[in-house]
Amino acid sequence: MKVLPFNLNTTKQTYTKGEKVEYIKPGAHLCTITSISTSDNLDNYNGSPFIDFNVSSNNKVGRCRFWAVKETDKPSTMEWKTKQIKDFLVNAGVKDFSDDSTAMNASIGKSLMVAFISEEYIGVNRDTDEPVIRESVRYRWSSKEGGNCTYTPDMNKKLTEEQISEFSMRHSQWSKNSNANYDTHEVDDDLPF
Image (spheres, rainbow, N blue to C red):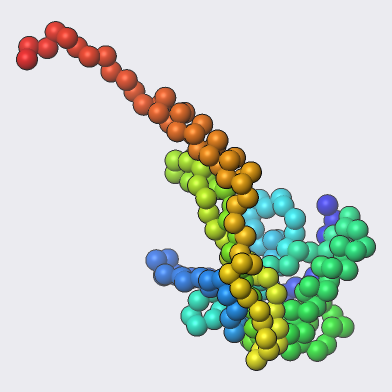
């Protein structure tokens, strides 16, 4: 799939081993853009291309993800993706859009209001393969620093009844399979006691 380039000069935010990282919770937060990363930075990533604006707020970190414009996108999708990222950059105070890379990199160090929501999803425990319900915090929208950035808890997305049923079915199947994998030992009736 051919992606239209953002031509970004990307930077990575790294943490030292063992350093505790706190993540931004759902809500409206005054955030500072600290760095930019793209799906190109990920090894063996084959999904839809994206760009992340890494942000911080009160010593907590988060990311604002935007999906890249692809040649295969419908014109309305291209327009929507472009509008989403441009609105974000305008809210961060970027004024020059003559070059994508320059505009995006000009946002680093700028502040804006960002609303984050939570979304539940079905995941898998990496150690045991047990199905689990997880929650991720995602970018919803932004406004200029000092502006009104609305967030209410009902914006958070819970699993639907169908998804809960699917989770229950998958977890039951996992339980059956994991119980079947235990070694069974026959009782030895010839024991001396």
